[in-house]
Image (cartoon, rainbow, N blue to C red; front, side, top):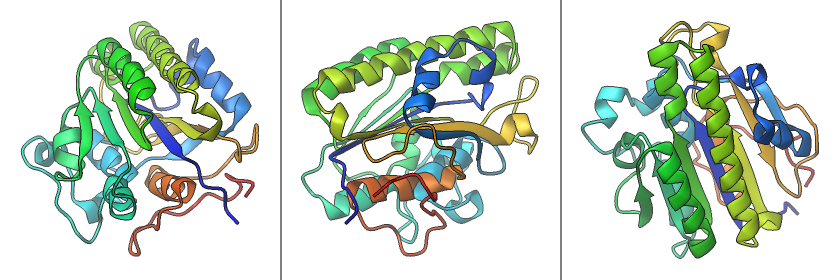
Length: 266
């Protein structure tokens, strides 16, 4: 029988691609050592935030969920045929504590459906991280989704892979470390599937294309049933299937998400 986790935490670093290999990221490196992962996770195309975060939360490609930056910035997501993983969890578990802490606020207002009793917060990465840590220790959420945005901002301003970009990515790694430490301090680490990933990378000072720098992102997952050091094959749209499997929630019947082979030992 498949093991069911009590908690899943996803920390997504916007615009991080797989540039972690070019700078100091001890927390990401530790996640790879302690769990399963890849630096060839294929994102959705076009490699733009709304399209990619949308796929990560709905389990379908952009041509199906229909989300774009302009759409999510002006109206809430309503698609009964392709619900987000938040909706699936809420339908299955009315009492579950769910939260989305996103620097880029359109995730909260334009991708996650309204009316699901999800706790939302938004703010700059450093300030948001402090509130995330307090929230984890206070609420012990069943599902927490986090989006950090400053790395993508540095890519647009200074260039993806530039010195200032890599410095910002190292700071994001520090935020990631604080969040994981909060999970441990809350006493729920042993029963949490902890995931770190990105929505897309970048080339020059932009993204949206299908270059390797833009379309491949890192993915690392740590949990008691995740084999250490294993390499898995997946796309960002598979992440809802991972969350559903971990929490024992039924997946959407018409999504494209699939559970990566070898991610769980049971």
